[in-house]
Image (cartoon, helix red, strand yellow):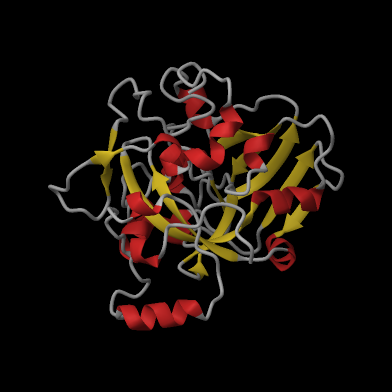
Length: 300
């Protein structure tokens, strides 16, 4: 398919799904998929340490399954992801409950290799499979006057055991400005490495906004609302001083309790050298125009 922005992260920046496959088998297998590998800056990508499937799927923040990094992988097997539907409502022409299978049938699934940067100052490179959020919003028909899109995670404490505790106000909610939601980098991920998205990574469908801190990329979505008002977001409600609505990756805006100037790459070992944090997580050329004239120290 045609690329609508710079394509410069490659499979050299990630580890193959099966660690026992050699590189020749890997490149041959994925060449046949005909999927797009997208985003980043090639000069910077060369310095990235590769991530394994195990790292991507066992080192997670998903408080619905516990606050430890390995809790989601240990506890997410309880989650039932079929049947699944997503309610789309608000300022749309075709509101309703959209079955996951219907959404998938209407979308073209592609691969995008994105940097992933956590607000806790660690990072990964992940090969997502999915589709542009814009395509899903087009399916529902966004109405004139809409300004924001809000998202809501499944609330099911019997399966999502972390929801039995008050670490956050459940269900988890997030939001984007409409132009952010419609940006071609913003995607709904439904898989990793061509495999079905694991529960601990947000099955069956999650948001991925690669220039923002990871907590903006809400998981296991059951509701999307289009609105003309800025929606509440979970971490902003929990502590607005530390977590702003925009949450763009910005090395010049520190978290009140730690610096954001550098990051630790997962997979680099205990004594891995920290690397500089890139403005907008390396996607400045693609997204900086969204914030032209804004005070990014104030709107963090």
